[in-house]
Image 1 (cartoon, protein in one colour):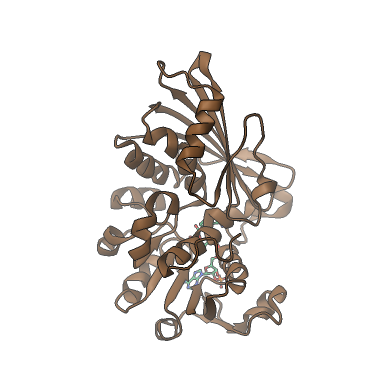
Image 2 (cartoon, rainbow, N blue to C red):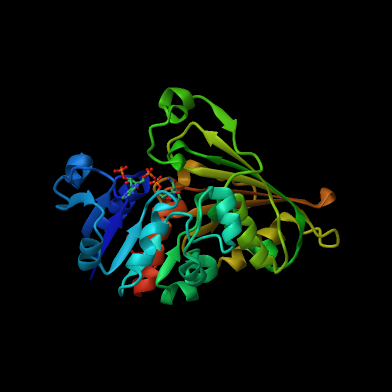
Length: 342
Ligand SMILES: NC(=O)c1ccc[n+]([C@@H]2O[C@H](COP(=O)([O-])OP(=O)(O)OC[C@H]3O[C@@H](n4cnc5c(N)ncnc54)[C@H](OP(=O)(O)O)[C@@H]3O)[C@@H](O)[C@H]2O)c1
């Protein structure tokens, strides 16, 4: 049994973490913090937690966080983690950071896409990118986990099997990505109001979204060569869920047909409890992964055009954030990986 804390407990990802951790038999939530000025019981902030948890959410305090937790989840906006991680890591605590502050290994790229200075190169170097399907062994021993972004989680899991076997043209990868509104966080900006988003879909940050360099970084490692994707995110009028449709060219000589491609993916993910490969002709749905830690993938081949289309769905707050963070905690602590997630 371990004691854990969540900093950023009142946001969408923090709320989802509480929800998942409350059903975890090996975890006690002992510390909750947010930006709030007045300390409030978490079950007053979220009445759905009444009779389930008796913890007061307070402004962040370093000493309390460290004395009450063995592992901390940081569900904070980017740049906020950067200020507190170096202080936390001076003590013997393990951290799972859901923000982007420790994901991009190139500081200049971080500073360009997040418009902020990065002054913690030391911890950035040792941070482990928390995608269990690729980095499970490193996650086991890590002190600091950089939990992946939601769009990158879907994109990397979609392309890893093809990149690992070197069967695609790495210069032509087109990612058409769509996210539900919770992906933007619980901030009160007019463009995210219900009446603005409802019954609409629109593309944004084309070729400049901050998740693009994260996708490029991880796909380049898998390909052992530079990969630069074309990434077009869209805002979708649903609360939660991400759907990505990815177009790639396969090697001309290969002309793999559906059955062989599906077999390749099934084999790559055969030991992965949260990646589900669809049978030929079956569609992927956001509804099937909402409120879960699953990632559903379908693959369709167009051999005449050397084209492969991969469609992938995750829940941005599940496998795209809090679910994946708990999966990482399970791996770090030696708990069964599916505990409280399936
Ligand atoms: N939403 C997603 O689908 C998703 C997916 C993957 C990763 N992430 C990442 O996860 C992190 C949290 O996302 P979110 O969507 O949950 O954001 P959010 O809804 O905006 O919540 C942010 C949380 O951080 C707290 N906070 C802000 N500044 C703080 C400070 N200086 N000290 C202490 N607490 C502070 C807020 O407290 P108050 O409520 O008191 O302001 C709130 O609890 C972000 O880095 C985001 O990029 C989000």
